[in-house]
Length: 491
Image (tube, rainbow, N blue to C red; front, top):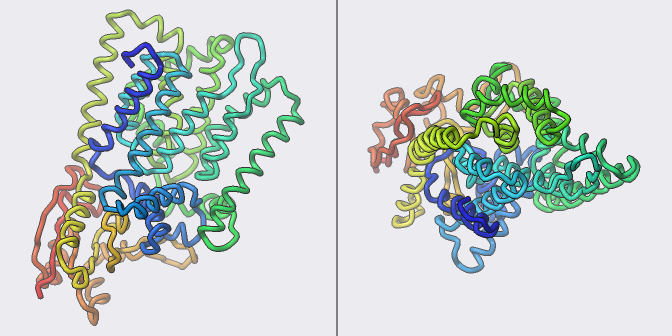
């Protein structure tokens, strides 16, 4: 950001993201592994575990397929070590996120704006993760940078390049269309092209996108499938997502937005008022504001809510908060320095904590297991995770075809009365569950548990000895613990 030439801005932003690949050493949500790396590993190496989403065929294989290509290349070059399998996809995502930051700089033409995006702790925390939300955010920024805005009074909004990018994102995750609805409507009504021509252009891109996404998904699933239709049927009509947690209607306004945007959440209402008052001169900002409010409104109607779902609108929030006359009038040199200082302080501290400390246990655990399995006889080991389901990455971080078991948490796909998933059954009465499931079965050689459950399964643990205790979190979620303990069976 300190350089005048654009190419140096690009280089500095990509380096900034590449460094974060090695700084971010924690896990965030299961999807960064189970909806990307685990699926790609299964594609490339023909072993692994697929979650219910893939068995129900509601996910597109496009993103895992791209990662599996990287895995195949590494395997061909005999470079498919665990370190390479886990790092190369993140390096790829880091480069894409850095390029997206650069496109944001070209779009906004404001160094403070791109600085605020680059320093934002939550984007830094997620920008190199193999989450579909990270990919869609990067591609959304790139699409915004080529979006045809109306300039002055001349209507020049006749370019559809952004639609090709939008089509690709929608093929991966259909819900990304929500923040783009206001933008597409603006494009349609401000374009100099006839409505018929625009209809054919939109329709053509939709058909092309559906065609290549269906080809990829059909190839990977082994049967003809249109995943967006299955996604809509299960997630929207049948409301399966609510199984994984429900939140208050206003959660995004009072929790989600303040966490991901920090101080801008306080500033946003004042900027919004300024934009509405001067809407004729602030077209870009108005359209972005409508997109932000519309997205939060629609997402608020869904009971299952997560911070990462707001990531694609974060760049627009930062843009309207830093690129309005109201902001420029406040930006005296003294205030600007104060603002930058506050931004650095309020983003660096949570950025370091969540990137280096909070929830680092799962990755440290699988690294310990991978090292142990590398130096010991693989045939004598099998692993059991007595933890909340999907709390740990699996074969993508061990890369050995051994037996790995874990507690499952599939939703009630068959509408069984009083349904309880396996993980909930275990945590309701761990001792009874172990007695029922391991009464006549051989015990796993390696057992992984959180420290909060140890006293409740003390009888079962008499068959084991602890071999390592790893820190996880100061503020664990329900059924998680402060530490993770790995036990080895006493032969």
